[in-house]
Image (tube, rainbow, N blue to C red; front, side, top):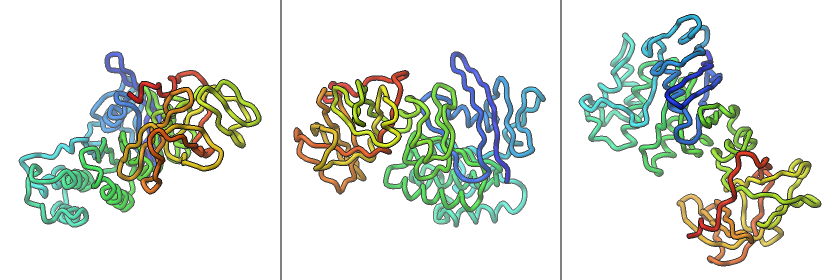
Length: 354
């Protein structure tokens, strides 16, 4: 097994992407970032569907692209499987013939049978794509990608077209299949739950730049800057006017900082929505303004004393107080991120309640 390395500089109009990345030979690497940041473009550059201005792409000792050496392998010679967001199944071909398309010479029929059985598609082998559900089409697209025996697997929003109920079972299936055939695997997604469930490593792209890259848990817990923090779900930001005896304060109230958090005076605090909980003890004073049931959790929109807003996610088995009730939130240290003032917007305004 070999890792995939790339150092790429790409420009189209006013958009520019610059990224240097090493993708491990096994496991899943996720790419996240706001729309238009360059995630899909980076996939297309790796696959050979776009051509960078400069740089290189290497898989082990094989050079796929090197501007200086004038090497530019066609997509078919890179042995890459790219699974598109809309799956791009051939509408006139059956499930079995879609899976067979693009296979290397050899026991193609055996490979098709294997993937029909492995992804539980045998009953649909002769159906056309329009007669399949979203989850079935997703499995056909994954089977087609893997049946080609690629050296690298690239997936662009593979779960976006299926409903929430199917997503968890498809994630489990994807984990199993990728573990069975380890290769460099890159997953582009907007869904942070996909990243937490599936990715061993995560890269955060902002404005065409790979701002942070590393093990998933490490990147989520220690974002490198405010924009990365926002991409990773640190949505609540509170300006700090001062710190005394380990307490950070502002017009929004005050919050206890422990350990290393108390060693420096931040200009802002970012609060992760997942993790804070209602408490009868000391905590951040809030008023419950709105509760939204999201199925697996509840979103609490809270008013702070300065009338700005704080969004918190509670497990569905925790019942919040009635609307308008005064409450307190316990905010664990791992839900607090000290940030400098640069590149930050204000906390949610009071208009968020209208």
